[in-house]
Image (cartoon, rainbow, N blue to C red; front, side, top):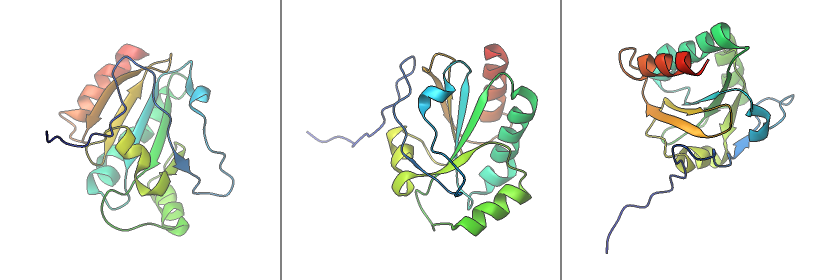
Length: 158
């Protein structure tokens, strides 16, 4: 019997599986999933080498923070499923130039959480309800598809 290896641990309607993250900045404390229960959580998997991430997804996540910071949480996970690793200076520069307003961390061993959560590339979004259950998972940054769907979903949640 042949089959594809699936590491995806995401099940809609079920609790968000553990994430495995690394700090980027010295002052960061690694987040605990329990800290995010009580408000919906939007997770963005992104990569500094991904044009769709930098041009559309990160600005969209920033907009979510700006418009809904009292009603939702946003968390970024920088992942590498292909390409190069980035150092602290690259992250500091991106944070400043892109005005990143949400906390973000590196994925453990480059792509552990990315694989565990069944991400389809970057950017990939996971939405978790206020009770900690996964409600949505979508790949992309097309304003007329992924970002529009996320906008509608978030409006319903808040």
